[in-house]
Length: 590
Ligand SMILES: Cc1cc2nc3c(=O)[nH]c(=O)nc-3n(C[C@H](O)[C@H](O)[C@H](O)COP(=O)(O)OP(=O)(O)OC[C@H]3O[C@@H](n4cnc5c(N)ncnc54)[C@H](O)[C@@H]3O)c2cc1C
Image (tube, rainbow, N blue to C red; front, side):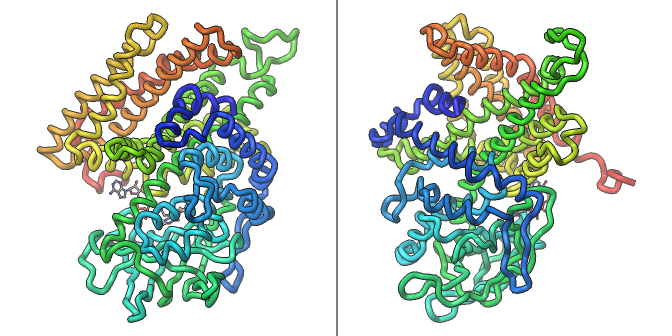
C-alpha cells in the first residue's frame, strides 16, 4: 500500500492528473480511501480462496456447467455487492464513473491475492470498453448495465485449434438469419471464463467470418453472443446454442476455467461493421494486454512478499551481518539472497511506475477535454502497451523464479505456496498475444509503422526529463546514464529501420532484444523519477526518511546491476538477422 500510494501521489501526481481531466472531485483522500477498502476486501475475501483454488481447480459437469473452486463464486458476489465491478464503469450505464486508472491498483491487489479468480471479471472491463466504442445503441443499452454492475460476465472468443496467433486462419462462420442477427457456428478453444457458476449470464465476444469474407485477417467480423438471450424485461431468457464442451488441465491458474466453447448456430449480433472485427477487437485486446501486464506485476509482488518474509526467518550458515552467538543467521544476510531479493524489488517497483503511468495515459486517451492531448496519450499508450505486456510479464517469470529459489527445496514443494506464483505467472507471457508477437508489434507496427513518430514521442519525454534534472548533483548517478542510454536506443532504432528496409527478417530478428532494451530504458527513466522524488523528499525533511533512502538504494542497485543488461541487448540487436536465420531448420535437433 505504501508503495502504491508513493507511485500514484508522489511520482505520478495523480491528483493533478485527475484535475486535468476535469475531475477535481477526485482528491487524495478519496483515492486513499478506495485503496484501503480494496486492500481490506482483497485480504479478507479474495486471498483466502487462492490456495484452495489452485489445489481443487475447476470441474466440468456432464451437462456442460462448470463448477469453480470453493469460495470463488461467493467472493464474486461480494465483489459485485460491494461495488468493485462497477468501480470504473461509465456512470450512464450505472457505474461509479471513476477513471480507468483507478482499476489498475485495484486489479494489482486482486490479482496478487488470487490471479485465477480475478480472471473471471478481468475481461468484463475490457468488454465494456469495446462495446462502448463499437456497439450499436440498442446493444449498448441491452448489455452494458449488466456488464458494468458485474451481474453478467464477458468472455473473449478468438482462438481456434489451428488459429492462435494467426487469426486469419479461423474457421468459425456467421450467417445472417434474416432477423437482423446472425447464426454463429464453430469451436473456440482456451476461452477464459467461457463458462462458470459466477453469474446468471455470460456475454461472449466472438470473432467469426461472414459468407462473403475476404481471405485472411481482413475478413473477420465481431459478434456479441449471449449464453442466454435476454427476455423482454432484460433478464436471461431462452438458452442460446453455445456451450462448454471441455475445460483444460493446466500448469497454473487452476481456478480459472479455460474452456472449449462450441457454437452450434448460436444467435449473435454484429458489433462494428462487417469485416471490421479485428479492428474492434483490438480495443478489447489492448486493454486486456495492459491488464495482463498488471497480472505479471501482481504475481511478482505477491511472490516477493512471501520470499522476503521467508528470507528474514530462515536461518542457514553464517553471514557477516549476523549477530547470533553460535547459531545460524537469517539467509537475508547472504549477498546472493540479497541479489535475488533486490532484483525482484527493483524490477517490481520500477515496473509499478511504468504500469501505473500507462494507466494514466489510458484515462487521458479517453477523457481528456483537449483532442490533441487525447491523441498524444493514445500514441504513448500504444507504444507502452506491448512493453507493459511483454517486459513486465517476462520479468515476472524471473521474479517468481527467484522467489522459489530463495525458499530452496521448500519452494519447490507445495507447502509454502510460492511455487503457485511461479506457475500462475507463466501464462502471462503467452496469452493476449505471445511476448514475441508483442515485440513485433512494438518494433514493426508501432515504431517502424509510425515512421519513428511514436519512438520519438517516448524518447522526447525521457529526454526532457533528463534536461530538467541534469543540474542536480544528487542525481548524477542516474541522469547522465539515462541520457546516454536514450542516445544509444535512438541510434539503434534508426539502425534497425535502415536494415529492415533491406531485409524484412531484420525486424523479427531484432524485435525481442529491442523490446527488452526499451523496457530497461523505461525502467531506468522510472527509477530516475523515483530517485528525483526521493532526493527532494529527504531534502525537505520528509517523515519516513528510511522509505526514501531505501528507494535511493534500490535505484542505485537497478542502475549498477540490472541496467547493464541493456548493453547486452544492444549488442544482440547489432548482430543482425543472419545469426538467427543461417541454421537450417533440420539442424536444430537431431
Ligand atoms: C490459460 C489460457 C487462457 C487463454 N484465454 C484465452 C481467451 O480468453 N480467449 C482467447 O481467444 N484465447 C485465449 N487463450 C489463447 C491464447 O491467447 C493463445 O494461446 C496465444 O495467443 C498463442 O496462440 P497459440 O497457442 O495458438 O500459439 P501459436 O500461435 O501456435 O504460437 C506458438 C508460438 O510461436 C510463436 N509465434 C507464433 N506466431 C508468431 C509471430 N507471428 N511472430 C513471432 N512469434 C510467433 C510464439 O512464441 C508462440 O508462443 C488462452 C490460452 C491459455 C493457455
